[in-house]
Image 1 (cartoon, one colour):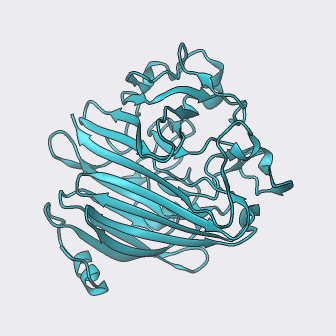
Image 2 (tube, rainbow, N blue to C red):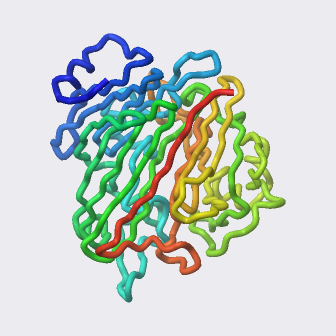
Length: 375
């Protein structure tokens, strides 16, 4: 179905149902950010009836409805029913993360013989871009139709010095919902001065029931022979270690709950899994398989493919029931699994890690796909 005008978008928004076989994009006003900027909510449907909702506040993935093995469509993301929830305190549900996903030790990093100081918001460390990271900005949005699906193009200009990061950064992120039930996230950015950059998304997945129960029965397989151990503040110690013989070995499928409470110092530091895996890559720029997740009750399968060198595996260990999300559900500990494709945590301070530096004249690019099916 061609998507030509804003009038078509509005008409689609008024449609009583989203029917399989018909792509659509709808937009509605969704309130205002603290800055006073207006916020929109976009609803995208592919030709097979899968539905994605995205808000321009923080580029947040609000919901993603995919079928189970019986063909019943259900949401697989934690989050909120309204903008008010996302304006409050929450652990980055579905958010677009930048400038730097994950932690930077003590909120400082060197670049070209200069030392930069960042906003600190996670104990002594900087986390996920700072106090007002990309997750709290209003993004300009343009919907589009692609050969293989429908999508939303998001743009934001991050000013020089924002949260302490150098350089004016022009960022574009494309979310595409494909007709073969994949969610593709494409990131690109340019800068006018040397900076560091690590863009990701902090979607909280529960393939069974969107956070009503723990994810401990989800079976996970990860294409990684090594991970990066951390200190008690979750900063990498500097050298990848083999997963073999540890609770972090997911080279073959294991249920998350099998070893999540093992007597292991790294498990204790994370309260479970909250670690970066060093992906087994063949070609640095290719889209390659990273993770497979299978939930046996629903039969849902999610494959993660990425061009990034690492993935942060986080099992919602800091959820404690204090945050009430969609339909008033209190999200309990380990009610979700996050798979944040990324450069490694604290890379600007770790010479042995892949560089996260971006210079004028260079184009930052990365792609991640979450591919859904059933078994």
